[in-house]
Every structure is written in C-alpha cells, then in structure tokens.
Length: 169
Image (cartoon, rainbow, N blue to C red; front, side, top):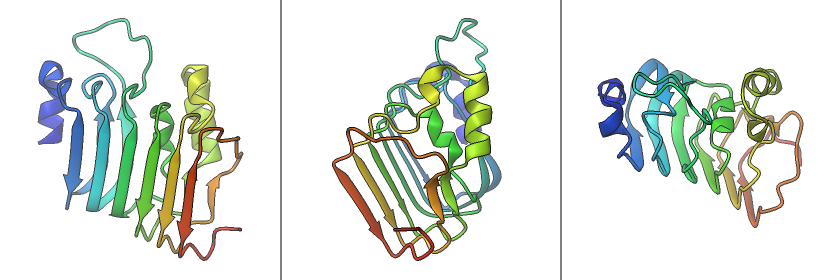
C-alpha cells in the first residue's frame, strides 16, 4: 500500500503523518520526494529487516536536498529486524525521537553507514540530530551506543534512558 501511494507523488506529498502498524517486510523504502511533507512518523509492532531511503523523483529533476525537511517527530515501538537506524540522518530537523522495545537494535547511527550517507549527500546530513530536543530510549536490551562519533546536541532538553543495560553510562 505504501509503495503504491509513494508512486503517486502528488498524493504522497500530502501525507503529513504516517503510521506503520504490524507490517512485515524485508525492506521498507521511504521516498523523501514523495513523502516531502511528512511531519510525524510512527512504526509500531512491525518486523522490517531494513529501512532504506530513496530520493529519486519521476516528476522532478532538480532536487535541492534528499532529506525529510519537515519531519520533526519519529516514534519507533516494537520494531524487530534492524540493528541500526542510520536512515534517521535523512531527518535533519528532527526534534523528538522515541525508540522503545526494539530487541534487535544495537545502535542508533552506525558510523560506517553514516559516513557513506554523508559522502554522497549535503553537509547538513553529516551531524546527526542538530535540532533534537527530546530523546527517549526505553527497553532496548541490545543497544550498545547511540552514535559512534557523538556530536553535541545543543537543543536537547529531555534525555530519557530506561532499561538499556548494554548502553554505557
């Protein structure tokens, strides 16, 4: 269903809130052009091995930025499959990130994947979460690190970590 909507870029560009619930897929591809108006994104109770970002457009040739410019809130609850969430670098204006009960997650931003993204895309994607105000990490039993190369988070006002036993203090 999501793939069909994304193929119709004019329709998809109206989507401001996307909720994926009980989805099972090897790969979930999100298109930054088609979902350009996306402001809030939720993934809940899903099994997705990998989340990929696509920024190609059938209707537009010149793309100023391959990012989700308006995406400010992401909630991931009970997502099984991915070991990392480096695709979050495509949300440079993210203000709220909540990740809970995702048993396979080992790190939020993987250094190697982050570097490969920043080598291909604009500099505003090299620093993760420059506008992040709230970060909540709960019940992530395998989480070992947030980011291999931590950067200052000048806007962070709320940082809540609970039941992440492998995350260094």
